[in-house]
Length: 352
Ligand SMILES: Nc1ncnc2c1ncn2[C@@H]1O[C@H](COP(=O)(O)OP(=O)(O)O)[C@@H](O)[C@H]1O
Ligand SMILES: [Mg+2]
Image (cartoon, rainbow, N blue to C red; front, side):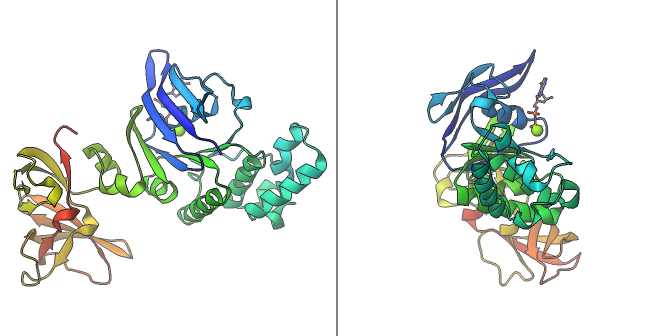
């Protein structure tokens, strides 16, 4: 499998700079998600890795070899897009075998690889059907099979699940994840959906406005975002400004929070504290509350999601969202106490 590197990559379209100074290393066999809002430069980055676009500056390396100027047909990459673009008048097997046929691969070899790949994507029983006779998920699997049959060294997928309904998307994510691990193929997956990126990827590259904002494992990105913008994009709802002192206490407008040991003795500074909604405990009596980091509030709104429920708890002038399992439901108007353990508070320096 292939290691992919981007070094100081930039892409200009006329006077507009779409991508600036991106350094990224994707290990051999790794699944990396490029994540960011629409227009941030994900597709442009993917197109440069594939060879459909040439970087304006910087270089792209496959296994330490500079391929920046190598055209797409000579890079041995496979691409899957949101639109499947299957041939409607061809059966599943003809669609899947198409790439090998145009390359003049001998018939017995085509037959062997077809059998293998249809097994992998679980489409053997549908091989004689036409695209119009398939579900969205099945069509997407045909598109994936059609790409994989050419044995690409890097697989690239650009928002491939965006057209599918929620349940099917979940199934397809698990399918792609399992397939990628089984084949061990270096994979770059573009999405604007942070949940999708976290579920699928070994590492996630967050891109904002053409810049690489953070490159980390999903849990690190979620629990330890390096800026407020990333915290916000990853779904953090409780972000408050605070004054931190040398003893490791953060003074917010609604309470003083004791921080984890890493924050002690670092001098006083301004910062933002992030209290993730699912690590805050909601208590109905003050007696059961731990002494540290407990503060009072009133439930002012409730959002029910089935398995979980979000409470808006008003504490002083702030609103804090708390996510709980819905097996217990607390009424609006109820007085409550919130508690958060010091080591579960994440701090972002003021400048970030
Ligand atoms: N061929 C092009 N010419 C001019 N501008 C482009 C071209 N391709 C992309 N862009 C611009 O570059 C930015 C990034 O686009 P794109 O990579 O498609 O974003 P994403 O895939 O993250 O939604 C957008 O502002 C887009 O309009
Ligand atoms: Mg795009």
